[in-house]
Picture (cartoon, one colour):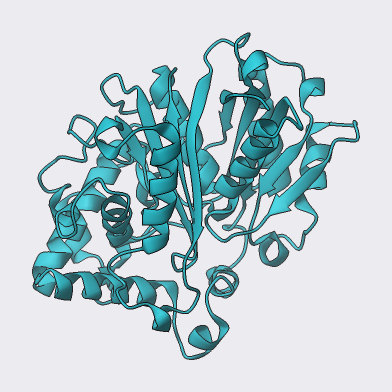
Length: 389
């Protein structure tokens, strides 16, 4: 069994609106990743690809071989599509990692792709609804409503008035737009003010439009390699820990919506494998589909005590130059949310932060980075820890 696995190549398309189908988007990202790895395409032994809603938005299933075809790969390598809502790409990554760790392969291509903006928003909403419990969505639940429940549960638990809660949430959006404004891959490359957020329309009180991430088109890819191969590559970034956990599917069964035990479990497993703790992480990308989720991710993963994470952006602790730099890409809020690719974007972004070549706001010489990618109503979770050496 190989001792270690590394990321040896990364590739990302800009996140935003694309006229190019998702399989071609992935081919573009994959060619960048393979080129960055300095390996011939013929060295790729398998493809693990995240994609969620192409059945609805592009009338295309069987996405993994379609992506191989778009790349011009004519060999008979195995490939598979992974669907786990917003966590699809990070689970594809994890399966590629485990396949190398097992000794089955030496070089694997992983990532995700999604195209959501070429169809009416009503179609996207219909597709997104399939990632939650059937009974609850038939009762009228939407993802905006779910995050409103989470925000209000958090506010009740920590005795925050609704106006104060909204202000604190708005600071998170301001911070992520500050980071995304200088990320050339981001969907929303502009800074915003607290007043911009607070004046935006309510979607599901207390959640406002500008508390939420946009639906985006995009693709991201990574080349993973065994230690022997990685040592010959230019800038390997090592996978130090990988945790995955599953949360309860029905939100009615959750005793406390303000925390996510699945994030806590996945993070604990990843930290145990890495032999590290939250204090040693120098840069983090977490799943802020709605800004309250950034707080849940950070607290559940152990970066802040319960009730403290909500104040971190206002205190500038989670800015690029703070003591807990979070979502320097702009997060889902500003970088965008191409659902089946989001986890792969996070991993590419952290790998580039650690290599020192991320094109945007950078943390101060981080040695260790972490991603939290969450699917559905907290039901599918991965936590990945990367390190330079």
